[in-house]
Image (cartoon, rainbow, N blue to C red):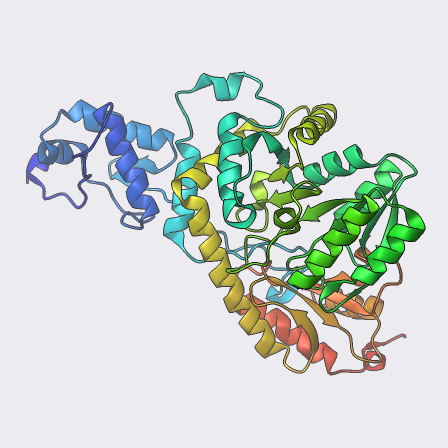
Length: 464
């Protein structure tokens, strides 16, 4: 049969195409891969057959296929044709026995090939005809477009944020370095929850800044403990993680948020609000920055709600003057935030990809929380169905060192409380539910943990 008359298996929709026709065809390949209409390994129509169907020149289709190949979307096989090369999710790297390392608190991998392809396609088509992005330094705190995209992303939680108060940083750690370095110097103190993000502890040690432990309970930081610390230590700032706290998963109730803000205002203490997980709850409590925008440095990273690979965080300063100082800190420590990462984040935020990814992460996190609750029934857990980590308090007889060592022998990594503790570490560990590549591997690992909790530590010792 004449190739020109073959009934083609795929036809792009070009009715609204703008610009060169070959680029429009390549864009349609990308769109249909993202939507799941073109799957990995599918053969595209022969070039002459597609040209005849569309009523266009063969060379136009040939250029389109070459463009798609250049973007990594298809591959040509000699004598066979052109095939879709959609990126497939890796199966991950389970450790011994098919178990997983749960020490990293990663967003869970969602099973949505079309959405994954959409994310990659947006990266592949990013401003390809704009040499400025690749060959010029960009503004230290982000371009106007990057700042505007960040402000729009934060609007549901913070309301209208002037873009000139928002600084684009190299991840949450970069935002913390800029904030802490701006507010405190060597020898100063800052307050933090008794269990706090390990990155803050490392940062404070590096800068020579003292950390003052503030007591917490199952609902989060205790206002009376913060007040006492303000009176005794005269801290320069309070660092806190009030929503889905790392590691305890606690979310600070609204009345405590108001109390913390009032105490900080009374004592002239700035607040650094690490809102790493703030995008995950469907109906979040108002951030501290919404209650006291003139007092709070709000850090909103994208690692937990969108992608750890981007290393992008939005830092909202109390005013423009503070934002300028933060830009100076970024210039001194990093030069600038990666323009490529910022541009990808902006693209995803503007076209709805970020919202779709967030919804997928929320759904997968909820499913994994349910698995954990079922598999660890009866254990002393602190957890939240909208997060993807949990805090496991160990039963009498176990200490965190023995427990983590036994799990390591079984090929499972967890984080003992020592990593988070500013004062006395409790007998507890944090489990990251997002690290397992699949739900089945998560179930397997949690079953091992549940079995170990039922045993006596003495039964695990074998010294010869």
